[in-house]
Amino acid sequence: MPKVWVDLANSPQVMFFAPLIREMERRGIDVLTTARDFSETVPLAKYLGLNVRVVGRHGGKSKLGKAKAMLSRVASLANLLRGRGIDLALSHNSYDAILAGRLLRTTVWTYMDYDLQPANHLAFRLAHRVFVQEWFPEDALRRYGASGRKVVRYRGLKEEVYLRDFSPDPDFLRTLGEFHRPLIVARPPSTSSLYTAGYGEFWEVLSLLKGRGYDVRVIRRNPEDASMAKSVGVRVLPRPIDGPQLLYWSDAFVGGGGTMTREAVILGTRTFSVFPAPGFLDRKLMDLGLVESLSKSKARRVEIRERRHRNLRFFNRNLRDDLLEFILNFLNR
Image (cartoon, rainbow, N blue to C red):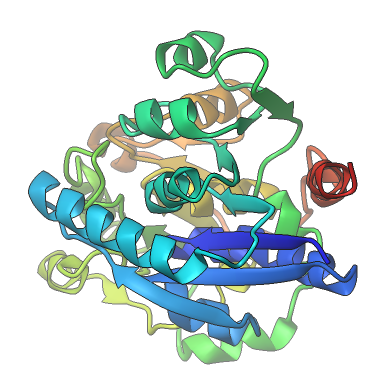
């Protein structure tokens, strides 16, 4: 029986890998899943029915803390996996898993859809195969040491892997309690990542939108988000919450780039970005007119209306099958 190891380092990775894990298990593949204790990663994995082994935790905002946590987790993962006969290690740029996989002399694959992450230098050089979105810049691949032979480009957005199964729930809005339209949902940029430089204009933009009468709700991402939201007079949504349902039933989304921005695009919600460091996907979606840049000056005059129609937008409905086929072909070689 083939054996695959999947490592989940943050909550968006849970959503991405969950349908792939379930399909591999359905086909008789022995999948061992590990998860880092960070944000909602472990609760979300359990909510989705994944059997995960919790190994290590996030190292905080400092580079030293991150380095110590990574080395500790690499050692723990290697000890856990040693002797288990893993045929393939999969992650979405989990540096811990990539290092541990190489120590165990197993085949390591990584997926990545952000070109401004400095740690790509490590992940892309060590992984045996690097899966990137079709628009990922060629110069970034070369800069990070990903040779042409190891790179696989896929069509579509990784969020389509799980949103393919999305079904709107009209009863979801009851979980929000009282609200008025237009309803704007917002999620701040990460303040603990190597590639971000704080919040940028995020909170000022929300304050301006709130002052113009819009109902603005925030999904917490960082420990300090609740106090920041309170300081500008916007409400924080309870956690956990069904993100795709929330985005689908909202009139607009204001994001700090990343997964929820792309989810909003797929779910047909008007999408704004105040990300201080937009990656290639954000830039491409802006070029396509699917994401709008939002600054303080624009927040003073932008008009957001209640959405009357909601249509999903897919770039590649077969992405899950495409990625699974690569895995099966490798295991059956």
